[in-house]
Image (cartoon, rainbow, N blue to C red; front, side, top):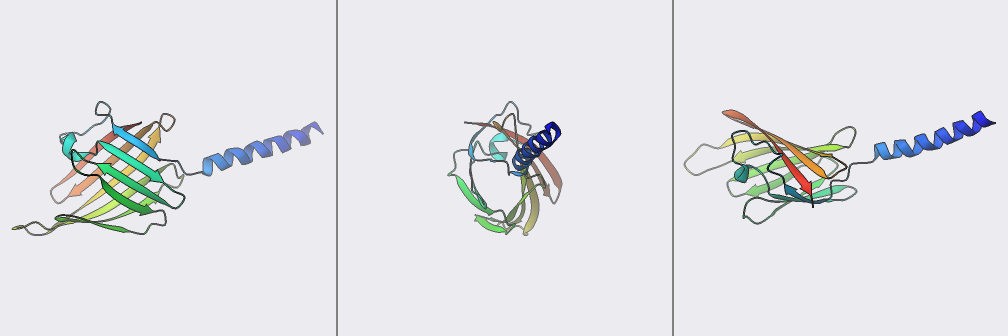
Length: 162
């Protein structure tokens, strides 16, 4: 009888633990840049990272609002089904999609940029941004890799939850 009770208790604990493990990480919140923990390599932090990120995560989508410098916030809407999102920002046209990692504890936004500037030939580059949480979901890290025609740029930007 004691063994049967023990097995039932272990089964219940396993179910609750599995449910927690299978739940998507919740990235919702207001995130402020932590320059001391970030690594920009040779790139200018003010030009290459959002100083503020607001994430509103829903059950099937995510709204990502980023503020760069003194510019107005940019707002992007991503569906969790992998559909692409097209954005135009002046001379830049961007096609992006969001993909969750298999464990659903981080996600990656992959983007293709098409750049058309006056007096220059059009050109393209790719960017991946991997978003992950740590320290009890109080730290957001964005690992960004940009592959341009003549170089590869890698930065790590750390944000604190407000």
